Figure 1 (tube, rainbow, N blue to C red):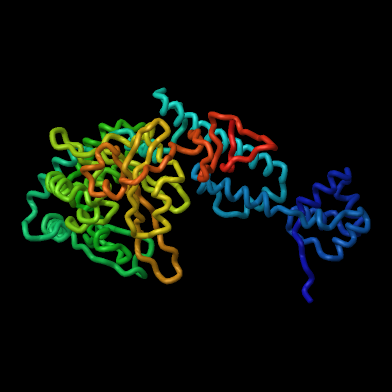
Figure 2 (cartoon, helix red, strand yellow):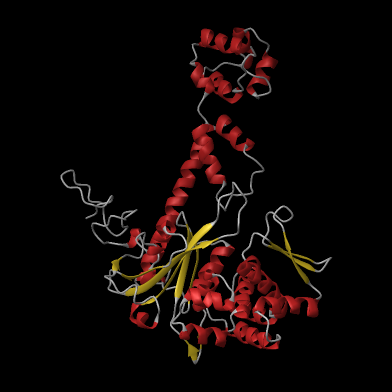
Length: 469
């Protein structure tokens, strides 16, 4: 039977240092050479079973101490270095293994420091939201370029006038009788010499779209639905034909870094693609005629439910505006993917972080439209419409990407919306987010409010998992 070998050099070094022994003294006691002990401590030689037994006999060392338990700290270190701030810093996990084994106290310090950083970041976020809700200026904090762009777009109107005007003018030049996707493909071939081709999964397994400048071909993944394929074509056309309008809107965003501007250009191209696929006046007329029925709108314009819903938040042209819708999209874990609004996302009034919102219930009924009225603690009420969105098609064994989207508007405007009648039942009492909500007895509460001390009373237990005073 093969002899089991254990590499535990750093642990052995710590034991030797704790006993105040030199390598020569320990090597003599173990009946090995000092050079061999040096190799063991540098993990270049293993601790054999015979040597382990010798250590236990001479120094009465618990063998479990040498075997060690670095799995916990190693797992936590992996979590730390998976953070976007640190991802990419290490080529693999080997360095983390070495840190966890050779310097466990330093590893523990890193873990404590990261926990403190996360806790302070969460407190700052809660405080910022609370101050914004009360009309105070938000607390400044370091932001990644993507975070800066998201916050900029969430605060401003979803209407980009230059892009809308350029998109309508461009759409008017396309020949009639064709759907928008076919017209855009013809334009790419005739004006830019670009052919569009759908590639199978095994040829392009990881990309949605790729433009090959050498062959002048635009490749689209077969994983995408027809509506999503058309959207990717629209993005390519918008990047080429509407670039001056996109750049002009980009300048108005006043972003602080080149990286934020680079990301913003891609986002504005996607916005321009929606304006191309659903020209402003035509979409506005259809939206009013259907009373904002998103399913009918997506079928009429050949787009997805998510794209039609997003387009509703962009209809704020001066003199030709409509109901100011807003939306939020999350994944099944509750991560916020995007927020947008016709007049900016109403963070102070609506919040969007309450677990009682129907956007969370949508995951239990995929593909179904859920409509209800919700009321905030201050009495503000909103009509909310939620539905799941399906990601690209997957191969057998892959897990499908499914997100959920919530579209909302002020409940006072619900009579003009097709979903208003379905949501005419008793409103659901919600809050902006658990950390900012003071509703008592909430069965869905996930965190205690930062504005109240916990009510730790041994004689009383409330319905909520977090009782507070």
